[in-house]
View 1 (spheres, rainbow, N blue to C red):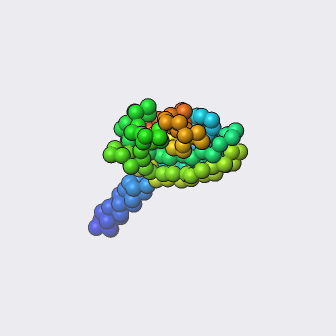
View 2 (cartoon, rainbow, N blue to C red; view 1 turned 90 degrees about the vertical axis):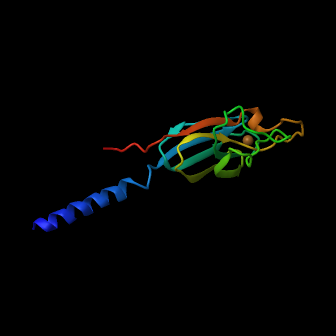
Length: 155
Ligand SMILES: [Cu+2]
């Protein structure tokens, strides 16, 4: 019996690490988009799958949500000449995107946010007028977001 006890304990240990290792914690938050703001019910989540339940409060315009891992400050993202954010600039890593949501519509998206660190949530649509710097980002559709270093265990 003795030689069986060791493998059993070893297998139990493997099973423990298999469960606690790769999969992070799932999170869910509400996001409200509108002219011109982004509100969320959470600004920090553990690494793992994150579901964004989005509502466009409008009242008039389409909006979108782009999730970017970056160390740029929320007011300091690299921008194009038209005022929209340069999503492909160095230091910008787009992790998720929910495109044009009509006013008064809801939608949802789940993204795997396993890299801890600073994120930004933005709407990167251009304003209808063609003035320079007229973008939803410049108008205020931006919010900081954080993925924590470690998943919190529920024990
Ligand atoms: Cu917008």
